[in-house]
Length: 324
Length: 298
Image 1: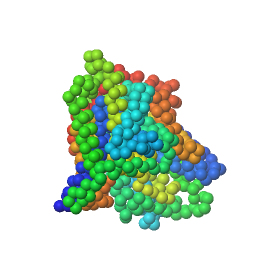
Image 2: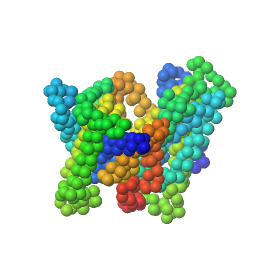
Image 3: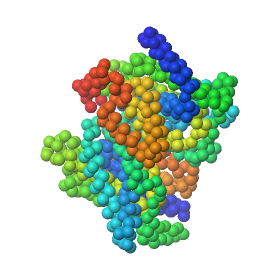
Image 4: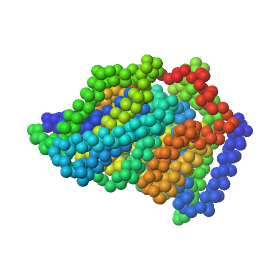
């Protein structure tokens, strides 16, 4: 396990540095898109952890939006340190995730999806109508500083990109090691047989809450990053279509895999960017068809493509013993 | 007193409309266990279809109550074109999958349909103002209402009662109920389950397009009306209990009255109230007010 930790951490560090160097040579709009991909990829990463348990949240926008608003509102008070803002957003969304997770852990399938959706729509409704929180106009977010360093001009976006890369890299290492840990492995078997887990002495409810808190923390961090890169936040971050977008990317990514979460987000954003410019009224159709085809032909998403060759299909293992 | 009456009347009118929009969603879930996210897009297509027919040069000549028949025809044509196609060609491929996968499939479908709407009808607003004035104005005490609103209430009652009676009092309904109860046993008893699914889904699509067609005169028809309708329908069917017609009626009334109270007493809480009630119901009765308790997955 220790050597695994070291190898993964080193690999992630090398990848992060390589991407950071590469980032110095690309035009600004690509850098901006990459920063968005990193932010949204974190939300998707969290949803992947839930999808491993066969839970789909149609309300992840809630934590994403909460993180963004925590970041935005605190930055309005004059605090602009990116590290501190990200930490606060992570903490805030983790607390919200814990409180709501206590209730949500008793729900499965469409009920879990719908309950999450209702909660995120509550936040949307509150934000839309509360004048003190900017209402439908949203809130402006000040340009972030980094432990006292305030980049200006062209450097501003690049420094933020490196920061986002570091945050995403650290989160990915954490998520990878978590999926290989006892807790992570136990969580993955929730979808096969809950009773078996319970008679082994594990609490399914606790596992769900635990994963849910991780997912909401990651969504909060993603929200904070989006707030800082776009400089403006609006209630639509909590609207159900935002959550739907995340679910879409998660299905595309598949439950198993860390890099695939970011890869799928990159595919999504690229399709949206390219197709959105060239065929503004039919890019959703392209995405929708893409989603249907990937559900039909890649039930385990992009991550499944790389996995199938070396491991037996999870379905084949579960079939004989699944009592459902 | 006036406010109380206004809340009551607004709530009933809005609730009736919501019921009309949501009943197809709950029916399809009840029979096929599919939470059809594309229901909103189908509702929008119904509105566009009705608008196209009513505004066409041929049917545009028609005046008076016969316009309502033209709108109904729009809904029927849209449903017959889309329902069987979607069920036979698309959904059939995913029947063996999990409920949540089917939800995702219909989500993908809703994205496709939304753009299809933009490609066919463009992104600009369409209007069918004519029928809205058909029933004149109604004066109740100091308040004025548009007569068409009460027509919607009547339509909701007819559609709701009709669907309920077909399901509970006819042979077709008994067959559908048996498929709802257990599709494998039904198949063993000689019921053509595939045909029941086809019929139920097409009828669900028809209910969506019907709601859209008769909402068309009340609104500016834009490609986004479906997104707003489906999210409200979710609230209605979850509050009432997924798959229950009576539940959808109660859910629609609860949402309608809560929203009307909020608008009259505390306008800022309009959206908040609907989803707060939805969350509260999920918390206290996860299966909804009329839903059946589901067994835990083992």
